[in-house]
Length: 229
Image 1 (tube, rainbow, N blue to C red):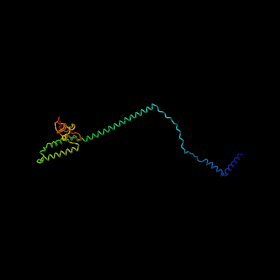
Image 2: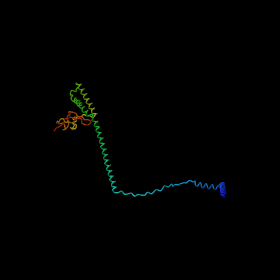
Image 3: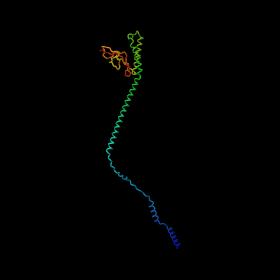
Image 4: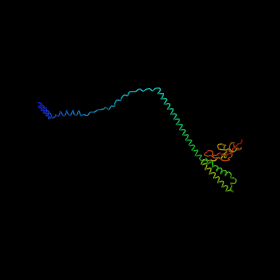
């Protein structure tokens, strides 16, 4: 009995396999497969997300002692700024004064570099000037051509020498030529004498001419001063 039942079941299974599948069944299978294989889409909105509302925080009022401390700190900073600005301005002024002083010292060193040399040179100029003054003018006649030639040569030499010295800032002056008022900064009074046709305190004779080096007195002129009273 058991063998017969098994035989019948196997024959029925073979018949069911041999039967063709209907087209409607294929369509159903395809629809089911497409439904299972269809891709899933996720759509996003273009609208900007709503901003999250931030909770408003109530500002805490500063304490009175904190405000006072801040004011004190600000005042201290302002005082520091004023002090540093004053120090800065003073430094600039000191630097400019140093520049000006250095410029004057350099200029003075340049102008008076030949001072020692000039002091030695004016002695020779004095000797030449005295030689010209000691030539008797009554002897300068055509009868003494050699003396005239010598005198003119000395005079020309003196003129060239004085002009050369003048180009280097050394200038000779004679206060008695224009009866200058006695100036103790430029003149040295050797003696006083009454002169009726001269004003008191004027220079009427020069014993030794003076020299200026760049408008500074290198040697004072030795003069006689008028004193009528």
